[in-house]
Image (tube, rainbow, N blue to C red; front, side):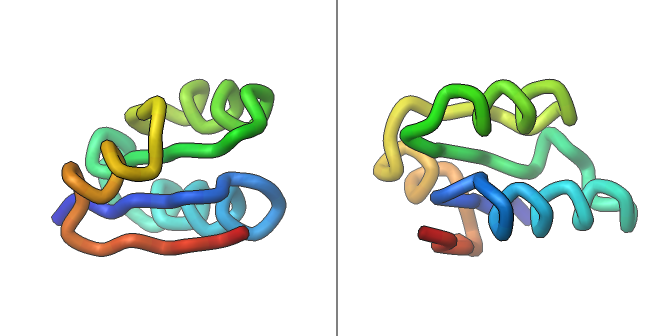
Length: 67
């Protein structure tokens, strides 16, 4: 299952990191955020980074919208 996060700040970033810590593959997590620092943190965790919310939606079965 591919999980997408649109918005990777305090809430979205914490949720995504929690999934990885609980055994989800970081490569199954897709992220987009307007803030490049938030994306850098998610990339460091191993998540896939996309340049738009549309790309996240195309590559995800489930999407968390945290804005």
